[in-house]
Image (cartoon, rainbow over all chains, first blue to last red; front, top):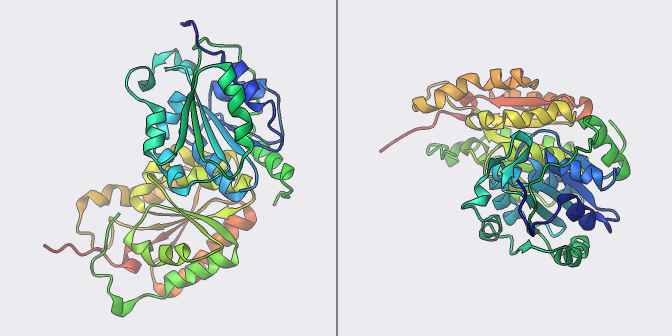
Length: 196
Length: 181
């Protein structure tokens, strides 16, 4: 199922992460993790292969621990819906360095393309705003995404939330590491923390 | 979330203060919680501690994920909740095994020891089992004079050995909630 005028997810994520510098990137399980891997493996990538609904909270935990570093969560609409309460928790904490990106294809792509709530009734940008995330917007063109990406480096003006409607075509998987312990140890190492 | 209406001012217990001291000593920085009356004194102390970040949650599983992120970012945390919240966490508990991070949770118990509300009993009865099935070690404190050593041991094995650990704070310790009209 592919509709015209929707953005291609890999191009979106590559554009968002092109100038990432020291950013820590958390990818929600499913295609978002593959997109982040496709943009280039990185010591500061936190790939999720499970824990559905947890991506934003993992990002919040990193963001509170490292307030001077940009933290970007990139996840899908289904994963976001499962953790939708976490938007209220982020709205309360207001971490200036946290950006939440939802790649919204309006379907559960990993399980066969069943419709999600966002194609019919749920407005995630409206939810984010109502939860106290004032900077919540839709990004509809590659130009808007390229203009938005540098703002993710600003660690005092978040939290920010962006929903990007993407094409629901299933792309070839780009498999990131599935070893959670390795992933966390690698991020900690990049931040200067030794293993226990 | 339950106010225990009879948690009277005349007998403010000292064990929450013991827990707070231990958490401070272990350099615990992020404290996600869903409120419970049994944790109210500790939550107040955390809210007043400049070195700690109290993070109120909408559901307990958020706290498991938050602590995973905190650890990746170099900080320790502890999740405060009551027994009914443990069931909300089950899938997210996967993170404790997959990421091998130092997970500690302090759980105030309902559904035991003189419980008035039968709706608390099923989850209270399965709380320890849920943790054990999830690969999380369970310690329990039932008397004020043992809270300190139990929480100390739990923090030690969680933070020093990355052994995910839950401390159950018995309803006998906290006092059964009194329901009055």
